[in-house]
Image (cartoon, rainbow, N blue to C red):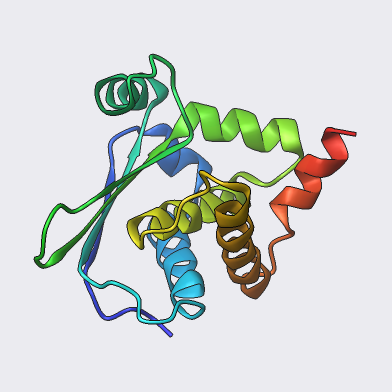
Length: 159
């Protein structure tokens, strides 16, 4: 089921277009996949920005006080309104993680969009219990997209 709200995708870093054949489709499929597993999801306009590590490091420093790049940041809308929030993805970090973990770039991007969208829905992974719930939803949505459980991949590496 496709959500009935606007999704605006902005490609700031040109390398995204080189790596993803159809960024719009990847983003929309990921959102649709997680949408179908949520009860009473929040709705509103969603913005996705596909940016560079330099830009996400600036945002991470400004909003999380961490002076390093990260793969995804989510910014929920404050207060009631027609905007759900923003998801920002960093090209270089995601590309490096995908190579390191033996994942396709597209699959890793889909996972991080799902992850970011769950944050906009109020989910987090601050406690082990919260992480189990959030990861369970991610795994269900990824399975619907025929993408392997990324947490099993990471568990194999940590052994």
